[in-house]
Image 1 (cartoon, rainbow, N blue to C red):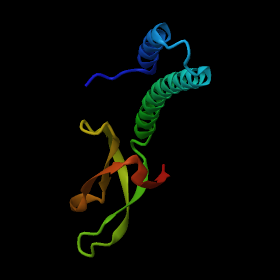
Image 2: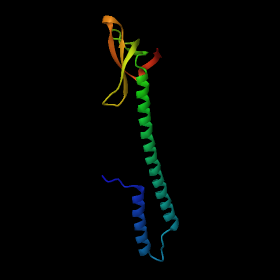
Image 3: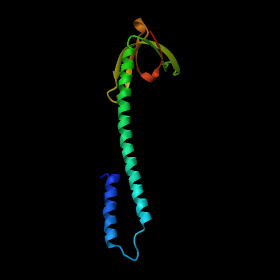
Length: 140
């Protein structure tokens, strides 16, 4: 499928308009108000396309900045104690847990920044993988 831009549509319209003007009936000329209105609409469409392109580029920049900020924040949590909620194995209800952040990494499928957290001591150690949004408290 070929995508046509507002500029291409406007150029096609101008070619068609020129042909119509060349071949119009002198007793029934084209309405200049209609032509002006259509040209204005094409101009507005072109401006909207340009704004959309600019916003897309700006959005991409923000996404890159946010990803870098998340990675930096996640790295700063290594060695800290975090509190989060997880489903309890026996009860199925949310349980408040505390653990030490051991690693920070990106999920290769989603690009999301994740934390590797160890909860418990001795033989009772469990590993959890959390998103940054799951952390509700950070302690030294």
